[in-house]
Length: 63
Image 1 (tube, rainbow, N blue to C red):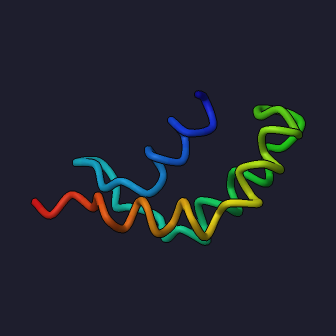
Image 2 (cartoon, rainbow, N blue to C red):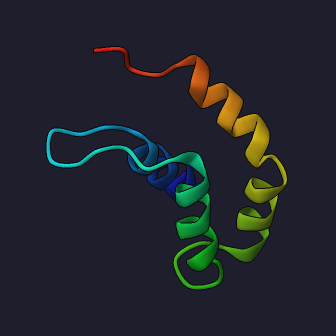
């Protein structure tokens, strides 16, 4: 859940920051593999990164 939460936070615009592009968010997550995130979970996420990008694109906040 932590990885999904961080991914969402990174790709979402907030009042205090702009959203990161998907590729930059993935880079940040991969950099935390083995320290902040379990390596197996990180690898599983990376394996479906394109699918996650597509899903996130369907739910972009259009405000």
